[in-house]
Image (cartoon, rainbow, N blue to C red; front, top):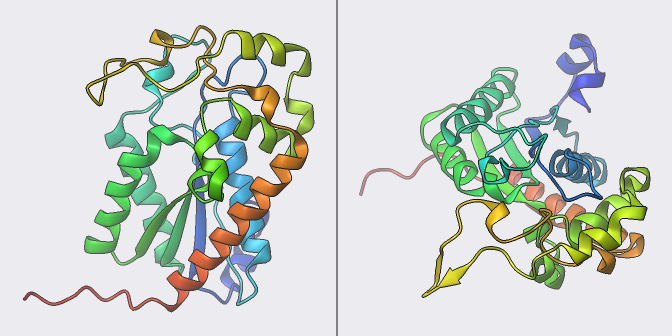
Length: 246
């Protein structure tokens, strides 16, 4: 059930304690991909996983569309919130869901910059609130493809070429590749010297978007959906009581 499309009486009739919350960002994705890439992909995976889950209904919350993205601040259109604000938003959204009985929640993430804060807030929710929350980042759950995850590179471009091909500016893909960096950051002695993305990529792209076609995007969505369904089953069955003091 997509919560934003339902009436309150539809929502009241939902017989489940499972929910998914898509989270992403509004940030630059090179000259060829939209600012909403991260929340578009997260929402697509969340909805596909809910549809494919065959052990009951899953409530799909509206996406959280602004994330921890200050590292992209030099590129026009990027929006960001602090990690503290992001954690508070996710915690409040999960708390709202839990108040209606949907207290087992998978937070489906599409933005790498959200990962540290998301892990922290899900742990806080599970320890201290009347809910159990687990973070799930879709591009970590696509097998060997994960090694190619950059930024607006092959994976995200492939994904949108499959789900929303009209959003990719195909006439700009070659330029996106020409201005891209090969990897994320500037590394010395296992430390990243770069704070902002503009320090190591001319146009915001990391990786070659030309390597991401729609067929690959379909495989990515299938793999992420399968992984999310497995996680939903585990969350549904898990004993969420906290262990006693030892």
